[in-house]
Image (tube, rainbow, N blue to C red; front, side):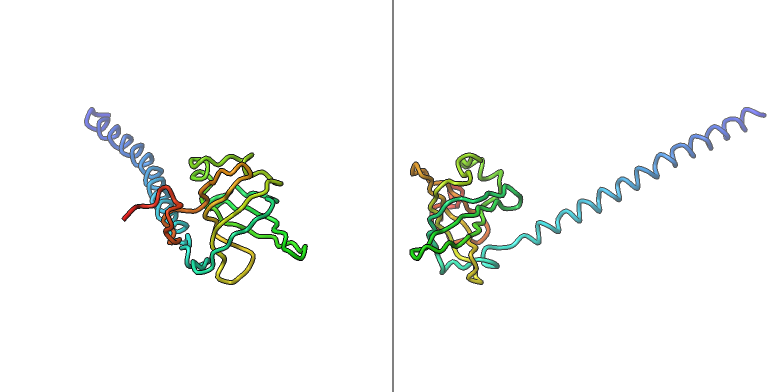
Length: 165
């Protein structure tokens, strides 16, 4: 085989190897691009405050925590509120994202089941026993901000991250 033929063969083999290496790279690039585009969908689907809660229906609920769900995109505090007649209403209070709550001083043991709390917030538009929590007052008097910034909730100065105008 001539030198020219060997060089051509080597070049052809190198090209085939590079082509095989490029195919998985292209597939990975396409997969990454698709994943990036699809990951924007959940963010767009995240609701605004007004879609579920009514800023004209403020609530103050005193009760015992029965459960806390530290889940994204919102933590949920479940409380049992005893009425004057002795009946109990079980409320679900939407709070901010768990990471934001921890940065604001929340700890799992500060909102443990059995803890008596006062929760201020806004009732669901369907009048169910659900509310968007704004502040949670603990037995020792500490107030923790429970809300989510930038969701359209009323600006009342309770949010430490709320822009001042």
